[in-house]
Image 1 (cartoon, rainbow, N blue to C red):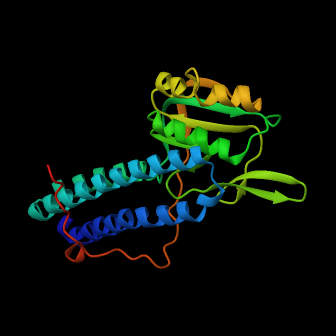
Image 2: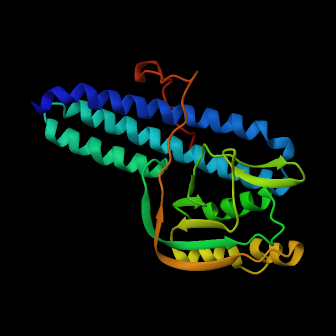
Image 3: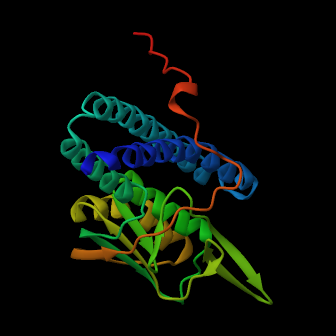
Length: 241
C-alpha cells in the first residue's frame, strides 16, 4: 500500500525544486524594480543579502538533487524514502517561511513617536539577517525572500507597509537566533542602532527572549514561472580550482 504513494512524493520534490529555481528570478526582479528608490547603503546591503540567498538556494538545489537521486536509488524501500521526504519537506517549509517556528531570539520595538522610514526598517531586517537570524517577523508578518517593505501615502500621512498592508505602531520585529549575537549585531559601537539614535532620534527597545513564536506565511501564486523538469535543467558547472 505504501508503494503507491511514491509517484506523489517524487512529484512534490520536483515542484519544490522548480520553486527554488524560480525564487532567485523573482527576487532579482523585485530588487531591480525598487533600486532607484534605495540609498547607497541599502543597495550594498541588499546586494550582499541577494548574493547570500542565491548561494544558499544553489546549495538547496544541489541537496535536493542529491536527495532525489537517493530516493530514486532506494525506491524499493518506500518507508525510508517517505521518511526522508517528510524530513526534507519540513526543512524546506521552515527555510521558506511556510511553517510557524519558535525559539530564542530578540524583539525590537519601535514606538509611534519615532520618525521611522521604511528604509530604516529594511536596514534593521538586513542587519538581523547578517547577524545570523534564522526567522524574522514584523508585526506578525513573516519576512522572507518574497516580502516587500515599502511606504504608502494616504493624504498627508505616510505609512510603512509590508506587502501593501499598513504597519501600525508599535512596530515589533521578532528575530529567532542566538539572542546575544543578534543584539550585538544591532548595538555594537558605530553600528545601526547607534546611528539611528544619533542621526534620527530613533531609539528602538531591544529585548532578549527565550521563547518567541513566529507565524508562517504562504508562497505567492505563480502565473508565468513553471518548474523545469530535472532532465531539462542545465548541468551544474564545476568551479575552477
